[in-house]
Image (cartoon, rainbow, N blue to C red; front, side, top):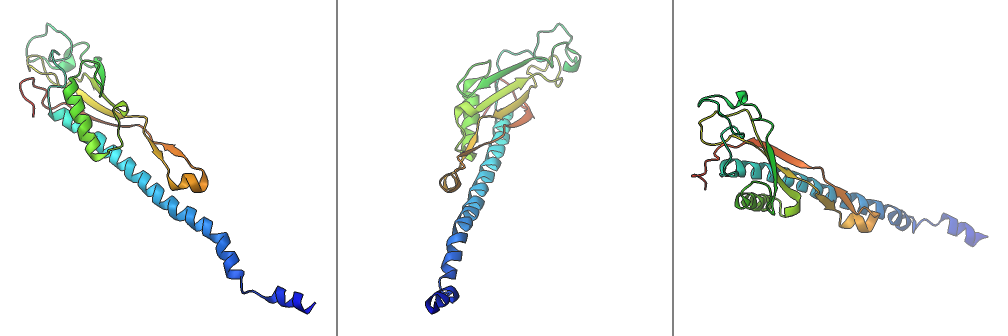
Length: 191
């Protein structure tokens, strides 16, 4: 009976038991903070890459060739604002990094490469450029003034440590897009 009382009063291993119970929680919390910090970095990088790619396309022309001033053939007199031309804002096309659409593949590929410099996890199948007509510009300008939207879709963040510790495998990221007015879509210019 005396040995049992001594055993019940003995607290020399209490710290070890408490540490054993708390250590997994501390691990999950620590690695969770690190992993979510990395996820936020990827989120920010994807957003920045989208804006940079849109800016690149807007200032490097031509993205489209053979498109009339207001995106639709018109018999309006020179100087007529595109906002007064029927169908100028309803025109649109989409292009992927692999080509397709009416866009110049070299310009889209260069924009993808620029985006990948900021966010290397972006793949060609995540990258799309949408071009649509605007009511900017005028008949006789010689070049269209499109609205250029760069979209990133289908990105996911894969957890490394939390997958092993807590079974959290991946998190879908939202779509990212940036729209900018095409500044210099002159077919004779470009850099």
